[in-house]
Image 1 (cartoon, rainbow, N blue to C red):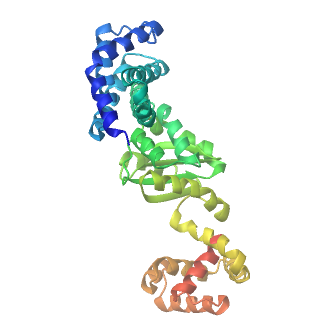
Image 2 (cartoon, rainbow, N blue to C red; image 1 turned 30 degrees about the vertical axis):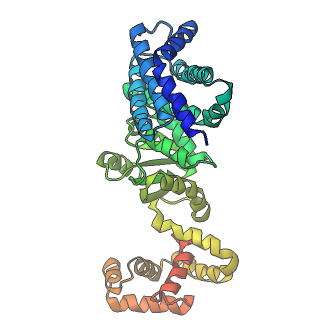
Amino acid sequence: MHQSKWNDLIAQALNDIPQIVEDFLQEFNEVGPYGDSGISNSEIRATAFEVLTLLLRATTSAEEQTNLKEHAEKFGHRRARQGIDLPLLVDAIHLDFKIIWNHLRKIAGDESLPVLIEHVEKLNYVVTEYAFYVRASFQREEARTAQDFRIVNSRYLDRLFSSDSLGERGLTEISHVLDIEEFTQCEVVVFHPTIADEAHSALEEISASGRIFCQSYGTSYAAFWKTLDPEVEKHIQTVKHLPGIRFETVVGLAEVRQAVRASSVVFNSYGCPKLLEPIANVMWAVARRALASVYGRRIEEISDYVKTLQDSGDPILATVDAYLKTGSIKQTAQQSFCHRNTVINRIKQFSTYSGLDITVPKQAALALVALSSHQ
């Protein structure tokens, strides 16, 4: 409603930037938040001029918000290298809001107070966003210097996995910190709670490098990385004997979050895998548990028969399992090292005793569900 008047106030404040900078420096120097940092007064003055100008412009221009982000990242890196304490740096940034707001109230007068009230949230948003990007870049520079990205990543990974109210803005912030774009393809593994500590130790070195993101989720231990990173893949191969689940080709942080949070359901349904299993091999256990309440007796009957085959070491079970994975008599014969007629006969025997014709897709799906508890 008052956008035109707000634009006029911002334009007037931009003309008053020299005075606003002086007001900032006066209060800044009284508090003395940088202590004995050795940063010159001329640099502080120049930076204050840049930041205050950008903040004001960003309240009326989306394009300036992009410039604000770029400036914040460079500023955060520079202050980290200069050894400034992060809390003191953030306090100094929030001082910008106070100085700008006081000046706007001064030039607006009582008659324009409704304009300020209507736009105070916008000003606060711009300052808060700037502070966020400064903090994130500051922490990443600290981590880079220490060669340990776990320091900056841990807080955001915990929020990604554990927060029950993570909105689109939260995902955007975390994506920026972790440098994971919306459509970046990732690989995700979640290790079973019984070996979470062992998985943590095994991946500790590479997680410090920032190439893989590792974090506890409940009593499990989760890790994800950008697809086709050979260095990470080499490390994952060293832990493939540990029980867990691997989600392949997960796109973006939203799906990473879904995969990690779904892992507890999979573990509860499947139990503890013998090694790091692809999700395709264990997801049927979830379906089995979901169907048990409505189709339980039939599933249990088939499961009992499967257990009998398993306990006796009957080759029918391996043949059926191979066929369910390939859907091909020829490939099943090759994998089972037997004649195709033997495969056909074993499938017929399974059909006779289980009541399921696994050459029919719907019945094959039910067989997969029943077999899921005997992998």
